[in-house]
Length: 212
Image 1: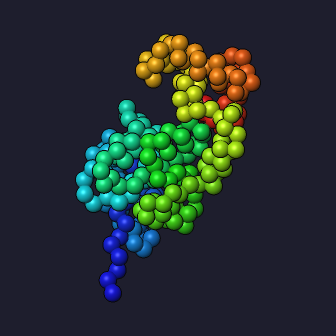
Image 2: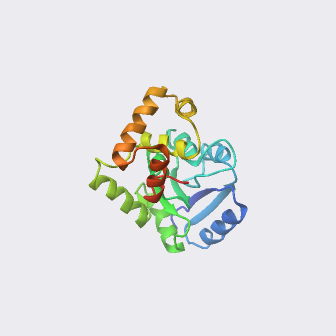
């Protein structure tokens, strides 16, 4: 009886130490083969388009122009694409929603133990969802109370506000009118029970909805 083909992995993270650590952990796991590791999201998109990759382990933040969620969308939008398993330090609603909407099969945090990481890789390779417990809880909370949960677009707007962008700058970044951005902010204020940009950012940061 022949052994099954190994699960071929592509690692994408801009920190060399993280890539080396992941490679060391995953290459000791039976049935895994790390075929390449890259430092940019752009490289991940390029290599994932070639034959020979089953699962991409994708960080969300890179030093270049492209973000992990954008790379995930570019990869999963192709026919016969490999699965993408997000592996990051960020667990805000903004990051989680962006990754899942982009087509990620799973979402793990970098403090996951090796056995949890290995199980998630196998699940992703089989087309099954793999979510960190904290991520699953956040998604469940959103489903339980959708009336006060910020939408994907609302979290995008508020994240840009937290990053210091004006309404005009946010509208250009998201290709929206300024009136639409203001409308989103009105809805955000109502959901968070606040009456200013500063208070909205503070409340959303405290609840883990956005990064600060």
